[in-house]
Amino acid sequence: MDIIRTKVLVREVMNSPVLTGSPDETADQLAKKMTEKQAGSVVLTKDGKPLGIVTQTDMVQKVIATNNKPSDIRANDMASLPLLTIEAEKDVTEAARRMRHLRVKRLGVTHNEELIGMISITDLSAIAPDLIDIVSEKARMLRGEVLRGKGPLTGYCDECSQWSDVLMDSEDKFICERCRGEPISEDKP
Image (tube, rainbow, N blue to C red; front, side, top):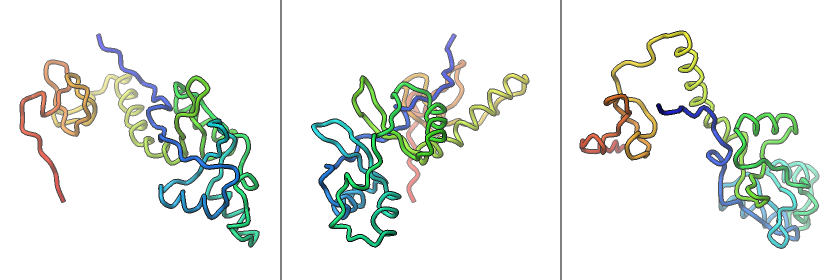
């Protein structure tokens, strides 16, 4: 009997690698890094150890709103210290609760006390629709309702463990096109 895992772990949702910077860099240098990498934050490190974080909000509140020149403000002067973290093996619901409790939008993700990624409110909201679907399906199961029709499902193939948008039920397994021996359809705009 296959066990259905109902938890989503922080490591499955986090972003990695982490964009890092030096405490001595200036606000304009960090802003350029963030723009180039399309990131909302930079983790300040020294000797490979995380010290704190500078976010877009920090830039607005501590540089722009105070009418400071970005090249005059050091990262260390606008950083939130220390970097708040969560273990990679924790459930995303714990991450959400921790962010809400601490009133932050990002947490560093650690494994064996090493920073391995970042998780943000945006990351959590991206998986929310899938989690709502899981909870809804579980509720229907508990009520004894029919769970699905004969159409395709999305998820991981029980044969090859690859993601597919067209899983089909075959002998109590959900199998992708490739494992069913069908040509792979590629939707192109």
